[in-house]
Length: 241
Ligand code: NAP
Image (cartoon, rainbow, N blue to C red; front, side):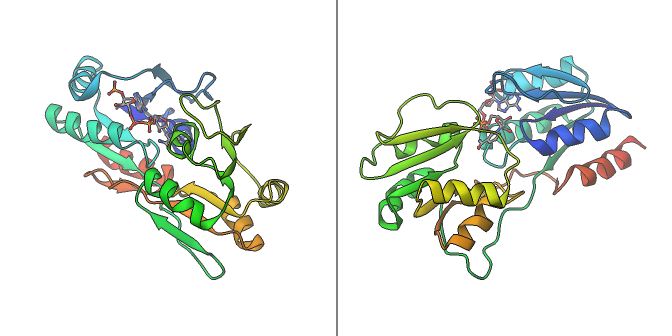
């Protein structure tokens, strides 16, 4: 089968590696990262030009199946995939790892958006470990009373908070490393999106008694979904028969 794999996540890269032996896998990246890790199979980079652009691509490239393994917060791309696949009659599968759940010892505050997180933040703490990614930093720009340590893969663009230290790094991260970061910055609050997956920073925050401001996911796309790349491989196998 010819599979368009909407990527930009570790799970998408893993799926490309698992499926490229049996199928033609074309991974699509938005082009936000200057030096992306290369997946197995083919790679295309850049937007499609909205729903119509994606529908046209699916026809022109003779795609049999689309797998949306984008980040849970890439809601625009996921929404376009639902509409374009419906328009062209191509099946769509979503790969989405489960979100995080608070356990004993966690002090989490859930909010619906980055703006809501920025509104609540000064009441929770002033020394902030901000892990919402490069595009998530601008929402906190007005908070002069807070001091931010912001971690992202690429440097932030656009407006940023006045008191900002940027740490350029890409996971995976360890609990020990996250504990050291929180301690060095004397963080009294951690801000994160509910991305799911490895949660070293959440474990470290729990151990240190640091509260967490957790931004909820946007609604899931209206399509069948599986939690892992392995489950997606099984789904693809049944489709290929
Ligand atoms: P988004 O807001 O949902 O998408 C905005 C536009 O970017 C889309 O309309 C599309 O342009 C283009 N685009 C997004 N993902 C694409 C892909 N995989 N291939 C081709 N074009 C894509 O997306 P985003 O939140 O900026 O995320 C961009 C990429 O970064 C995604 O691949 C995502 O998996 C990855 N990522 C996002 C986050 C996050 O927190 N949002 C975190 C880690 C990784 P057109 O309309 O022109 O087609």
